[in-house]
Each structure stands twice: as structure tokens, then as C-alpha cells.
Length: 316
Image (cartoon, helix red, strand yellow):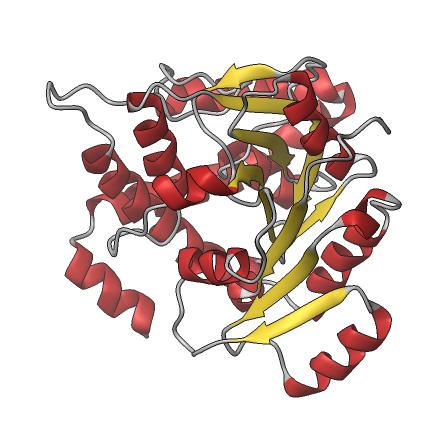
């Protein structure tokens, strides 16, 4: 796809908050994948990497040398995920801000696809792509079946969506100014789900661009227990944050996941997604099953353990 709008200014923002579970190799893969988005990337008002202390000093020189189009900004330690994105957005006046994450790599044509969403829907305020995780062994399959991201939908057309991923989204600046991404203190991740629900209540449409595809790293085994406990805690908090005044839960699933599906239904839906995408992965399911059970147990433990006890456990 090469017919991206040429009169639309844009900037790209990456944050290093996720380097706590990734490493510099993952960030390099992210930046390498952005470098393939030429010649469109050359038109960016700026490509900003916003760091709150996760990036070692020696990496500044290396990344500035290897990616001369990259501007690196260091901010105060403790700056949150959403605050890092907001700081990056403030570094330019571009019409559109594109948000990336440091532990995600972007497929060729991703940038053009996102921008073309605004060409296909000139009134669009937000266009999000699809993000998944790779599968190569039983462990990564277990993560694919239980983590945030479903498989790629296989769709080709721009369609409305109930949500977006904050690691793969383009947002017009007026929307960011009028309805910024919220940052509830009780959430580690999931701010995008709260934001998506707010946009829906305002009558605004999130557009899903299935051709803008990205791949998130597989959470390293050393971090998996902590991350799934937090995932469960976030799910419990999101259940409270995303209910309307009548107690109904807002739509929070990205297709091909289904918003109305139970957790068990979602798991079986993921199995079907995986097998349809690559039938050979079915052979890994028996080996992945015990890992899935363990990850699901961690997730529900995170939902059930009192927040104060969970914070103490995560601090150790």
C-alpha cells in the first residue's frame, strides 16, 4: 500500500516503559521495523523515543548513530506509560500522532496502512491496527492463547472497532487534546479500553485497519508470573471502570476475539484462531496445555488477591 495521504502531517511516538520486560534487542527490532517504513517515514514531523530511565546511557549514542531520524528525550523516572506517550505527542504539532511501543515490531507497509485509513475515512479521528504475538513453541503458543492480543483477523477492509491497541494506533491531535487517553492510577495497562469506551459514549468511531499489522514480543518466562498477576488485577479493575450506570459492561474485545465471550469461550476461540491461521500449531497444543493452565491460574489469582497483598507480592 503506497497511496497514503501526503497532505496529512504525522509524528511517531515510542516509549521505553516496556523495557522492564524486554531488552535493547527488542527495542532495536522495533526501530529496525520502523526504518522499513520508507519512504513514508521520511515525511514524519518527528520520530520520538521517550525514555524515563530504562534506556542505558550507552544506548543513546548507539541508537542516535544507527537511527539518525530518531529523537530521544529523557524524562523523569517514574513517568507512567500514558504520560510518556503524552510527552512524545507534545514534541510536535503534527495533525496525527502515531503511538508505538518499544517491545513491538511493525510489519512492512504498516505505516502506510494506518495513514491510508484517514484517506479511506476522511472524517476518522482514530485508526488502530492489529497486534498479535508470535508462535514458535509450546510456551509462546500458551501466551498467544491467554495474553491480550488475538491472532490477526485476516480482514482486508477498514471497519469500526470497539477498541484499539495503544501500541498500534494513529490519533488526530484535536481528539488527543479534547479527549486525552486516561491514566487511572489503578491500572498498569488497559487505559486504551477505558478510552475506547469513552469515545464510544461520545458517539465517535474507532476504525480498525487490519492491514496495519504489528507483532508484540512474547513475555519472557522470568516475567510471566508477575505480568499475569497484573493482567488479572487490571481485568478486575477494568470490569469496574468500564461498566455503565446500569451496570452493563462495555465492549472491550478486539476481533477476532468476541466481546460477549466468557474467559473460557475466549480461550476456545483463540484455539480456533490459532489452528485456522496455521494448522501445524495444533500439534503444539498438548504441550502448551499445562502452561495455559498455569497462566490462567496466575491471571485469576491476580483478580482475586486483594490489591494491597498483590502490591506487596509484586514488590518482592
